[in-house]
Amino acid sequence: MPVSPCVVGTWPFSRNPVFETMQLLCNENTSIDAVEKGINLAELDASYGPYHIGCAGWQNSEFVLELDAAIMNGADLNFGAVTALKGFPQAISVARRVMERSQHSMLTGEVQLALLRHKSLIFNKILEEVRNHK
Image 1 (tube, one colour):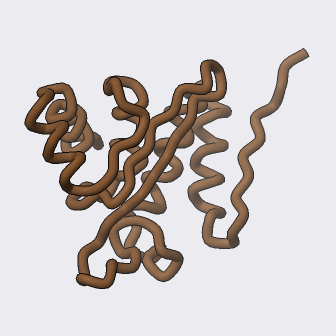
Image 2 (cartoon, helix red, strand yellow):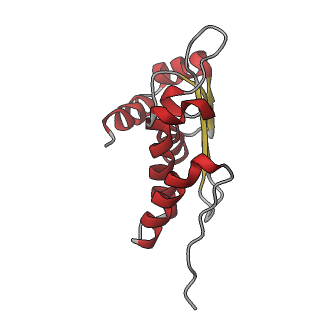
Image 3 (cartoon, one colour):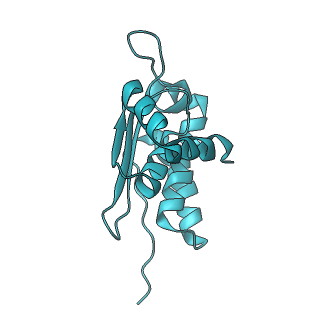
């Protein structure tokens, strides 16, 4: 018996991202693709800033925007996460690339990101992919 997709948002402002995610699932996109693209909607829309999300979210005590994101693949329970990410408005996309292409599950802060950039071209490719992601 076919199973219909279900997408849930816990806040009223999640309506558009939830709708987008549902549309993508109904058009046979993978759940990971649909979730990433749905969250990208909120991350890139400045009107979501008052809700602490994305490019217009609240800045830290030093007036710097740092973003956090995590994503998990339910099929294999693999996950990727980033915290205190600077300079990349699509934090969920970076978290996904960490999940899929990094030996690490979570990266946090400037020191960790700088260390990984220095040690591995993989992370530089991850960040470049997200920058060029449309």
